[in-house]
Length: 217
Image (cartoon, rainbow, N blue to C red; front, side, top):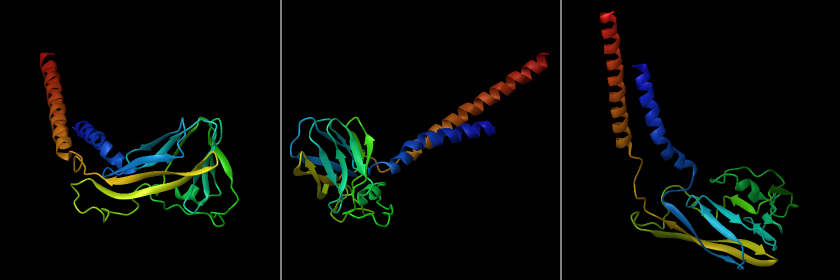
């Protein structure tokens, strides 16, 4: 019977894991939309991952691209041919390390610090958290008066340069009502009970077979 209970517990944990994993991804109530990337550049593809969690920029063209941090510091850059580098001398390098922006910036690292470029990719692909494109507060944003309605939270602008021309990534963060308020706990419990009953029945049948076999012997 202990084995039966253990298997039921494993089943509940397995079914519940997707809901737990969401805590480490985007906010299910938020959606970041990219409005434009300027200047317009052929071959550049910018995607939002996990609703509002991070950007993914793919570019292998000939024009160098620089992404700027929060105080004008050069945070990351794409070199011609697909080499991507991150500036370890930029405060944004540390602040973008997690979604909450709680990382400590080392002493001496400032927006005007000499750049310390480190290559992170050679295929023209880069993903990063950017705190300008998602909600940094806790709870429901004050812009949301009715949680059942899709609501604009704010517009964002992230400065970049492409081929030496100043530009930006612009877009909007939206509050989006969730289709489901939470994980279907009731369904998990019902499934676990059915599984438990089935396993218990198997145990009973096996015991009866063993008893019959002993009596026959």
